[in-house]
Amino acid sequence: MLLDSGCDNMLMGIKSLKIVKKTLDTDGSWMKDAASNSPKVYFLIGSRNNTVREFANMQALLEDSTKPGPRKLVLPHSWQGTGQVVYKGFLFFHNQGTPNEIVKYNLQKRTVEDRMLLPGGAGRALVYQHSPSTYIDLAVDEHGLWAIHAGPGLHGHLVLTKIEPGTLGVEHSWDTPCSSQDAEAGFLLCGVLYVVYRSGGHGPHRITCVYDPRGTISEEDLPNLFFPRRPRSHSMIHYNARDKQLYAWNDGSQILYKLQTKRKQPVK
Image 1 (cartoon, one colour):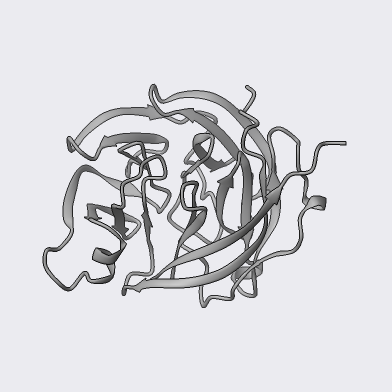
Image 2: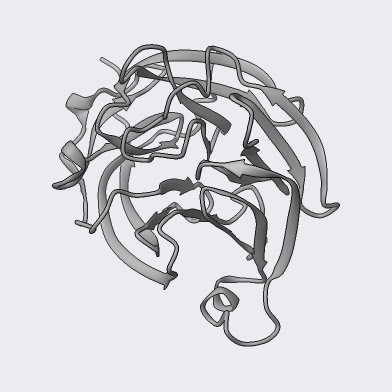
């Protein structure tokens, strides 16, 4: 499967950190719909829960204590981990109690639209060693919907799968060289997987494995990519292709990271 080559940016640095909100919850995820102009913000507290809070916009999230509060969506199933994404009006999440079932939930109609079983042994092991509840990490970038899971074996290498969001069919899977050992999070940008590591769960948060299915960039092309130091490992880091930022959750803080990118060099 060939990915559209219209997106040719590569990550060059994490420019800044903005703490948008602080909660008491160490794990969770938050996001916007990157495929929509909608300002709505989705807030999913905890690694096993079934209530999605939908805020009208970022300001409403900041002023959560005032009325009106967020719209609460109670899902028919709980999610597992912090790998959820919102894409084209749907919430995609790993169904708790199943090893590898992905649920597609219509946020407007409040109904389950579809579900799929992610192949390749997905869900048998943690995706990232330092994210102790996530067995399938979903991601969205300029190319669409992806899933990341760990392959077989202790600290197996990550498997990257491209999913067709309309039919939930698998377009292609790749075995990557990126290990789940010492990893805490991963995200995709322009069809390239970036994995964040934290050695021993301490020290800096650093991207030390990059996988490009098209082979247009390699780690030698990249500078040292460090995140600002945080007290714990990230519960999630997801890229939003519309506002070109990373949405992250770390020790109860909801964070935005601004990115520095540049165009990829032509393959020699």
